[in-house]
Length: 172
Image 1 (cartoon, rainbow, N blue to C red):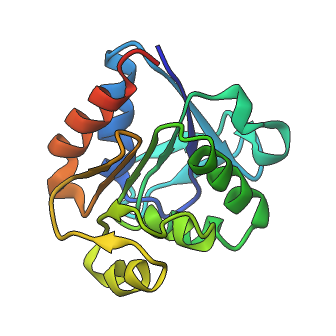
Image 2 (cartoon, rainbow, N blue to C red; image 1 turned 180 degrees about the horizontal axis):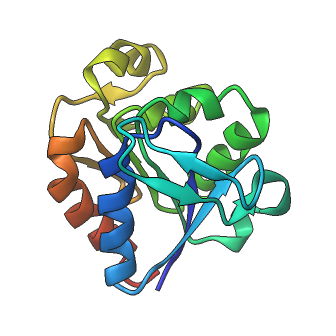
Image 3 (cartoon, rainbow, N blue to C red; image 1 turned 30 degrees about the horizontal axis):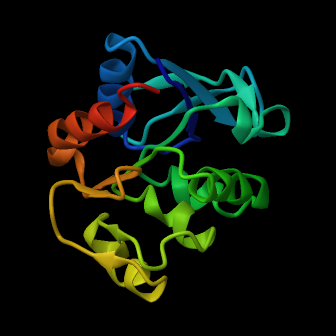
């Protein structure tokens, strides 16, 4: 089973974290939350979910994890302002480890310059940014690229996102 690094901070989209995290855990995977500081409690933008952070970004290495999960909301935009999160995400993409990003999650991958030539989707408002970053943008509920990068657009796409993420994680 996979050990999944989950980068998250305040204003994440509640269901885009809670629903996939539950699906991953139910399938036997380990979900580890990472923010600037361990022990901090972050809150979703809908006020429905609070998450106590497991690890600080300064104490983790991409080599310790099998996959990266990037929930949407305003969280990825905040995290990409910190080069440590950008480098962390880039390491997963460069190593071809599973990267699971929903809604605004690809913003972190844009900043990491990790989408060029890759098929991907994301929330409508970042579609043009993804194209500028060299992604082959598809307006679909879920896009899987090279059986490694799984992206979806919005909360309505969570069932498809979970299905394809779990498929990619099989055997990890």
